[in-house]
Image 1 (cartoon, helix red, strand yellow):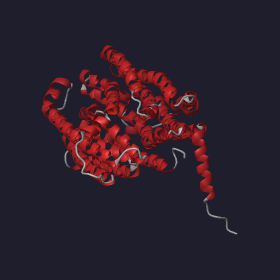
Image 2: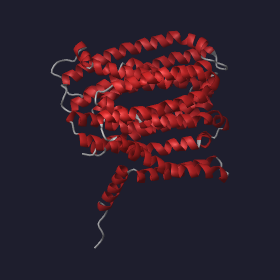
Image 3: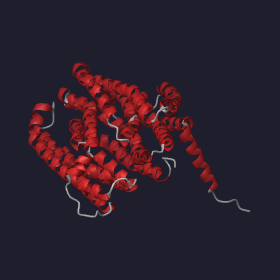
Length: 512
């Protein structure tokens, strides 16, 4: 069975819709939020994202572990009592950690406002109050993760994304209404985020509990259930710990060294390139449970074919977005916001961040295949090496080079992963398939996209376009690049042609 067909294909589509609506709506409203609350206040929203990322450390590998165990349950290799006991145990741990985080951030908010952040115009009381609210919202979203992960592993991805779309509309449009009609402040914005997060947590928790079959006995906190998955969870935690350091230490350091406004520009660029994960992660989420099932069934041929098909799809969708952001940095920001000040502040770092983030997103499927197999050692060792190099480089280069140095280090780090992790992963899990990944899954579609975007980047400045003309031009270039990538990727091209042929065969019969 093709890994992108049937339920998996529907899940990919649902993930794109659900996460796409949330990401694009949030991104589209960023300039509006900045006009209401200012760039310094938006930097606090960026800091909220950083803190939320660091919260992944407290996950201790529990969410990926629950997802893998639930996927094994659907494959028939794990009993429901184990799943129920594991879920109850993780819920207890999550609630305790969330309370500790909320209380700690609330108590420490005044110190962060006065001793860490370089505040220039906002009242310190406002900053401290906002950081206290950040603690509550972060704690709620932390608890959401375990329920969402369980539902995704149960293949309820369509439902999850329908609900995510509705909640994204409530979160974003509701925040806009609050800023317009209640209070145009960062405090009102964050308070609304907390209300929506509370609703989201309740909905996800109820859905997961009613979706799992009943167990023979009442679920309870179980040390044996935790011990049984402890090895895998520990490996995932160590990978997550080092991964958070690798992806967030630059932001943490910049929040201390730079004025809050300049840090806001860096976080705005990071928000924009974060949309690239919207392209890769829906595919990875949908395919991951299927990879577990294929590994459990030891179907090597189906595993290789499904893996390559998914990787080609990720490249086809990702490469146009990465190259448009990298080659048209200034034009993208100007077309998006209409603000020349934002364009001047963000464009110099956007290209490097897009390049590094694009590679990072491209490597998600190879990394998830390792986790699906239960192999955590490779990513752990590579992350240790990267941290040993990265952290000193940041401390040496960022004080002088600022945001550009941080963006350059991020790009170089991901080139290292591209050259080191991919060969080692394929040698163990998919022997003989590495060159197919580099050449057919990534290289050929990427060259096709470059053949469209590079001439367009040279031609565009000669046309003397305004904001809306640039927007239309960029959309046109992106669509042409997407078509070129799809035709250059053999597995994606084959599925597209088959789908088109199926539509024609199902068309209305000719009138006799």
